[in-house]
Image 1: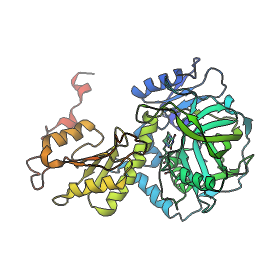
Image 2: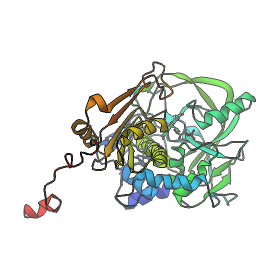
Image 3: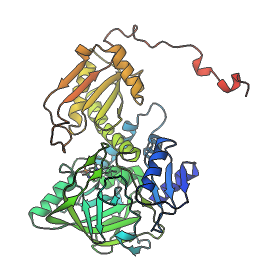
Image 4: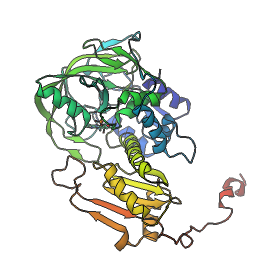
Length: 445
Ligand SMILES: Cc1cc2nc3c(=O)[nH]c(=O)nc-3n(C[C@H](O)[C@H](O)[C@H](O)COP(=O)(O)O)c2cc1C
């Protein structure tokens, strides 16, 4: 069974973990250390000695493209990560194998409370400690389908968390249905999960598909499930920490400010209330801390967003080689092999339509451009495109939903490809033998 703990161990064995054994404060200090490590080695961080808690905290587990590629099974240089991710999506859209194993003998659980968990406070103006890696697992009572999504939770007390639920997410629709009937929605809030569950929770699948099937495909085996202790919900055995609770109907309470994914604070707003019914954990639990808007939030969401755009493009066009969303999901770079005049223009329009919430700035480049290097991408635009013909601004189209001042309305589409039929003029110059230069040998070492 794939677990959070054995994921950490796997990377520890490969030298990708930094252990911090000195005493660290949960308020800001753990986040500050993580941010510094993300900006330098970008390794995984394990805090063994956090003030006021006996549980260790792991940060930045999913914060690197290399780790994500290994998790989803990207094979070699020519295999685009978005394409490898979509192989899992294809498998889960029409699952041929059972993707959950029910009624497994549960492993031992220990009863605990929210205040015993090592919840971190991340940013200067945050309203308080936040669980940022928590995943709501809910089963739609009408369809029996499981949905997984992240929702940050402000810790108010042992009995109450305040949840941020974006209005367009599946959970919002499921909760609205319950609310219309005056019912509380019973959910499991999972912390420290397997890589498959983590990535499935970053993914928006059509409502009729089960996100646990995606998790199973990535984890490489059906997800073993058990009945939760208090509410009898279906929960993955591998989730280290499970908070069972009820999202109260017609009840909203103040939540935030909080430092969000775009790098700014979101102001106080009225958010959903999760009434906590029970908290339990595996005896050897690790707690997953995550800085919103950092590598560990953005790299996984960029991957799943790029995969969705790649899927939509590859269904319509030949020559879609790679899609990368960077430095945020609001920007998309697409690498193509031009097949006909105007190809890039069509791809740009389709990319915008593939994700109305995120595709704000789209740019198409040729196959000789490194889409993982924004410098190379902009070099292509600067040297291959005439701005008066290759820059398209689409007006008045809404984008990201929380946008009271319409800052995300409109789209920018840039065609940075070689003018059709002039490939020879734009072939990149090269210096023969550069790939064989051995600097260590030349300097006599
Ligand atoms: C680390 C992380 C934190 C997130 N926090 C929130 C959040 O607080 N509220 C929210 O609505 N979405 C949040 N999201 C985004 C959704 O969980 C994500 O888009 C998910 O795929 C939506 O699932 P759905 O399409 O099944 O509704 C977060 C995503 C990540 C990766």
